[in-house]
Image 1 (cartoon, rainbow, N blue to C red):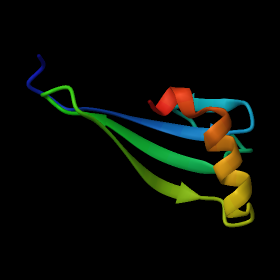
Image 2 (image 1 turned 90 degrees about the horizontal axis):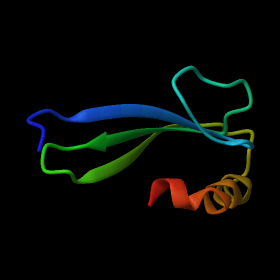
Image 3 (image 1 turned 180 degrees about the horizontal axis):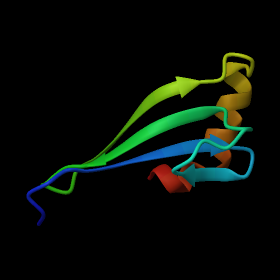
Image 4 (image 1 turned 45 degrees about the horizontal axis):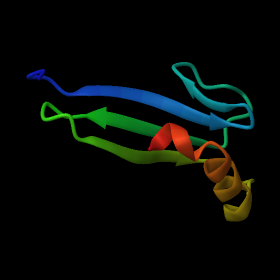
Amino acid sequence: MSSENLETIYHLSPDGWVPGVEPPDRVETWRRKVSSDDRVTWRCDWVDLKKSNAERDALRKQFHAFMA
């Protein structure tokens, strides 16, 4: 077990989850954190307000396995 937290930024796009640099077609940006006791948490940092909640929900549902 690590004594540090590991944090990674992911962007949700029509192609799925992309780490690192923001793709131009992202619809959301999330911060994934793995704590020293291996708990995983997700926090949404940004959303494209030009996309409806339904559109963003559909993309999250399509690629939901990644967040599990």
